[in-house]
Image (cartoon, rainbow, N blue to C red):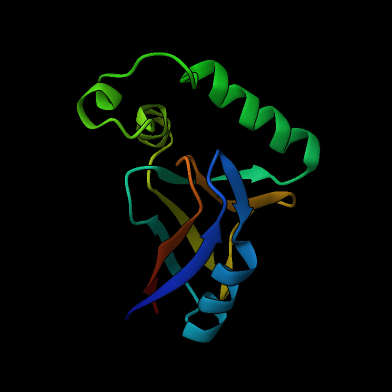
Length: 138
């Protein structure tokens, strides 16, 4: 069976990290499947999805790491072409990736003790993000 749901997540942009674990877990519980895979995918080219330990120190470290990897405030060809100032946002999102697959075991997400699913919005302005949760299993 395949169950597809869409979450709507309000973000502030600027590398905001939003814990969406509980929303994803609710959709998994509603699907009433015992085993399979859960794909979490964010639509858009300036956001990504991953897992981290969602605690203030690591959230800060993660944000700072993105500034080192794809800095804001340097020239990007995308900005020259479009003038929208979010070239770094596209680079960061491409490096992170738009999706994540989590095993579904005994009806629950097979996450580690401190592991949380997060949406990272790299864009330069607040957005309403659509996150697609697709549950495949039996």
